[in-house]
Image (cartoon, rainbow, N blue to C red):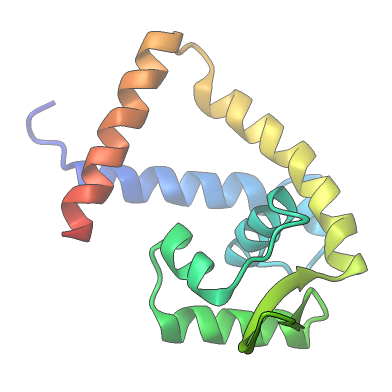
Amino acid sequence: MENRKIGKELRSLNNLIRRYLENHAHKKTVDNITGTNGWIIGYLSDRAGHDVFQRDLEVEFSITRSTASKVIDLMVRKGLIERQSVPYDGRLKKLVLTEKAQEISGWMQEDGVRLEAALLNGFTNDELTRLLTYLERMKNNLAD
């Protein structure tokens, strides 16, 4: 165990998650959805009815402003999200899912339930709590 590097293990797990999602039946139905697009659609879907802005995506996904801007621009071109003005601040544009993305979101929620079940198979509640605590600590270590 001592020769195993946590960064390598997390990268490997990330690759397996990506492969699982890319090979899922719903994913094959929607060829133009990348993993990142999928996570953003899920995030926006979970917050339906609340204003979500580019800055929220930057914080949630630990991405830079330029990366968020590029991803959003591409998703707008794909017809997945729209930028809409908010009445209380002319400088802000909230991000809203299109009808197309809302349909995709339903499929993704089903896929997400299956992915979580596969990832957590065999874990006790105590183990899961500890794992989430450790992962949060690692994220905080890198955010400093």
